[in-house]
Image 1: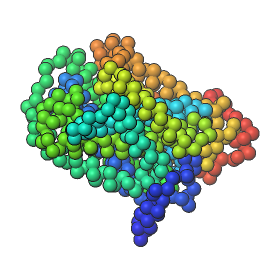
Image 2: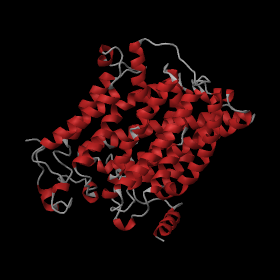
Image 3: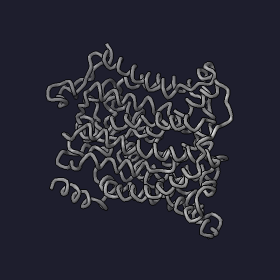
Image 4: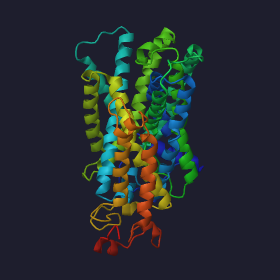
Length: 493
């Protein structure tokens, strides 16, 4: 009976614009079951991007089995995404608010909200670009010749579709997610049939120099890992669950919703790379699928890109609110959406090579994303997942998470040091760091960056004195309001 009431409640709210943004969700408004998170994440991750990434691994000159192993290893980061999600039900706030605990009120506007907006817009651009290219190809497949400039209209329609659902918010996303997942899964199952039928299991790429081979393996891991690492927003979709919900189930259902489609679709991309040129799979896929499947494939790209963009745009809107600008979530979704749409137009119609630009961006993104997710994950451990949602949304000077001048230096220092180190270790088509050069091209950014951030943050956190941690106070996170407003503690002894 409880589950039926939950479903009815969610459906009743679907189609109505969500009123909450980056604020605290009261316990009286909490509802749902952790398994709902699986469909939310599944609908956002049954996407064409993973197919492209699988193909990129083959373009790097890796063998079939190396590419498959990297697909699994890189996507193990979904476990971290699931771990971050458990902070949502406890706090009743989105990730951007929780990040105030690790960076401070002002610090989070740069390292939480600022990075979140930048990363979110980047992935919105990718989704709009993929969907627009596929929509144009689909229109051409039906023999329709568009007049000059009509491609801009197609791009605007794609953007409007995804941002409209994001504007309606959490309940609408929750209700539509299973239907999107089912429709996309059917097309990918059919695609799998054709891909495995054409795959060459004896595929052997041209031999690489041992040093270059190692560099390509590490680069492949960075490219694959960049996608799960971009989802440091698990709390956004779990914050409406009751505070006493099973944290294990929240973590598992969230992680599985991203991990399973990433592995399956990434594997299809790898397999397709043994049979066709994956430089432009939207065109070359016709070599291994029957003519009637082409429009379904292109339609799948459009729908999957839009569904992924729904979650991305929703979280980006919440991040934008965390910048300290007093505007509604609806307004931030629209503003960031306009920026992303304009940038996607440049990427598609002005930039010299869409795929090269995409690869370079994914390769470099992990230098920031890895440390950010690590700091967040370690903070949950150190605080024992005790977050006071009301305190987190108090942005006044002297509030519990104001720390020193609005900055919590352990988080800021960990991010600056780890990100700088990761950039120096990066070996991408756009930039090769001096450390990577000294190591013969080996890119260790996806490994060292997160580990350094985690270790440094934990060390600084544990040695900070006096330390203001609401979770360590009586009442598990209910700070003394008078005390918090009267004094601003030092951060380091």
